[in-house]
Amino acid sequence: FNRRNYEKLLLNISEYPELKNLSHCVVHNYAQSLFVAFQASLQKSDVGNDPPYHYLEEAERLMREEILANRDNIGMYVDNTNLLCQILICQRKFAEANQILTPCLQKAQRILGPSHVGTKDLLDLYAVICAHTK
Image 1 (cartoon, rainbow, N blue to C red):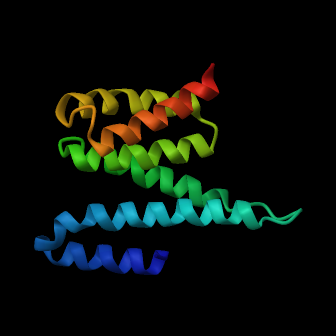
Image 2 (image 1 turned 45 degrees about the vertical axis):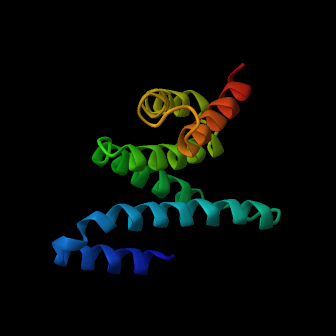
């Protein structure tokens, strides 16, 4: 999933209002692909070659916007928060990740319940954050 495809899909979505609900998927998939590409570059990085940190910055920005736009949809809110927190953890921004994760986790536990896969994923992230902040 590259930037050209992302921009092309968003343009099509803006031209056809009936596709509006797909924009979340497009943005999320693009941000996730940036995150995965960054992680892959860490695995392959040679001495002297910096990983593409701008990928993380762009993915973080996209997910912050998506969280603000889709807080009322619990599924989207959980998915977006999960990805944003993974991005923040990768950047070692543990306190910020915790600040974003906590209200989402509380809402997920209340609405989805503790056994829902989304809630469990958020709890796993919470454990990672706690392990790095103590």
